Structure formats: C-alpha cells, structure tokens
Length: 271
Image 1 (cartoon, rainbow, N blue to C red):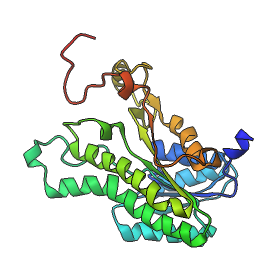
Image 2 (image 1 turned 120 degrees about the vertical axis):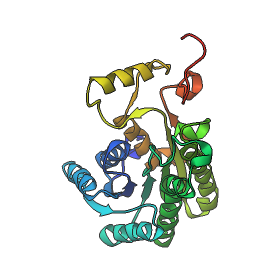
Image 3 (image 1 turned 180 degrees about the vertical axis):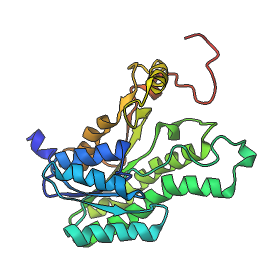
Image 4 (image 1 turned 45 degrees about the vertical axis):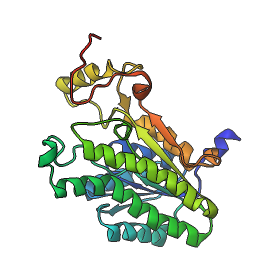
C-alpha cells in the first residue's frame, strides 16, 4: 500500500531547470516513479538530453525551451504540456541561479538590473509557473501538486548573495500562501529547501578538496548529492503526501540544525 501511494503512474509533471543538477535528478526520479515529464530550461541541448534519459525508463518526455523570467514563456510551457499530454498534475519549479549578478559587489553598487534579474529567476519564475499550472489544474478539475525549490540561504543572512537569499525566502513564504489559496481546488503546495548539494561530481582534485573542506561544517560530514533530492520530490508529488501542504522540507545534512557553515567570513573560534 505504501509503495503504491508513492507511484506516479498516469501523472504528468513539469520540471523547470531540468537540464542539469538537481532539476535533472528530480525529473529522472519522477519518471522512475511512473510520471511522464516535461523538461524545461533555457538550454535546449541539456533538456533534450534529460528527456532522452527519461525515455529510457519507458516514460514519455518532451523538452520545452523556456526562459522562466518571462511570464508569457511560462504560459507557453503549460500550454505545450496540456497540448501534448492533455493534463498537468505536478508543477516542480526548480529553475534558479545561485551565482546571481552583483552578488560580490558592495551593497550600494548592486544595480536595479542585478536585483531584478536575481529575483525574477529565483522567485518570479515560481509565481509565473504556479499561476499558469494551477489554472490548468483547476480547469481539468482533478487537483494537483506544486513543488517549489528554495534554499537554506533563504533562512539565514547571506552577505555575498543577499538578493538570492531574499528571493529564496520569498519562495518559502509564497509556497505557504499557495497552499492556503489553492486548498479549495485540491491543489497542494510544498517547498524543498536544499542545503549545500553538489550539482555534479567533482571535476578535478581541487574541486573535490573544496567540497571535502566544506563538508566538515555539516553534522553529516559530507556534501549532499543531487540524486538525494529525487526521492523527496517523488514523495511530495505522490499520494503518499496527501495530507501535507504548505510545508518546507529542509534537506541539508543537518547544516541549519547544528552546522556552522560560515557564509562570507571565517569562523572566529577554532573548530
């Protein structure tokens, strides 16, 4: 019974930022659980590769190039999904950019464009996709699930990327509001809050050494791997979480609970 409720057979999921890293792994996990998947991002070659990997699992997949900063493009994404599959059951908004513009600048040197670009990619995109997807879910009358991806940065100060942190904090609050607004339509909304997770295996010894040094600040003493977000995405997308909405699920190896994880400065005490 439990495993059956984790199944996504017959479901259609849209995943933004599906071309690489966390988004790619969550898209693959949803497919392995039985969902057909629409892969979206700005880079066509990457999402086409993800779609091909999904097809190897026996599920259907299409790649829809989408700039999630543009609300019209997000509308087009949902329209393409409904046109291809006749429905949408899961909207997973993962697209974001951590190396945001202006993040290393002095506060007073950050431009309006820097701020807007960071907020649009990380927060406005979740709004655009949720708005379009929820309308399609309501029109179909079958409910659905919205999953947004935030960041542990949204739960603490971040002197080197304050706009990114502000946007991700907004995603967390936005998710709670969605849960309350859409409950009457049988649409659930939850948020995944990753900590430091490697987007891909280390390319060289230098990167591996950096990841190893960073890991010592976390209780689990290692960096998270992208695939580890997949099972959580499946749970939140499935009927196994039917009584769960408006919640944020932190997956960070205990970093926020008991780690040090200094951001932008060195610790003043020995470790």
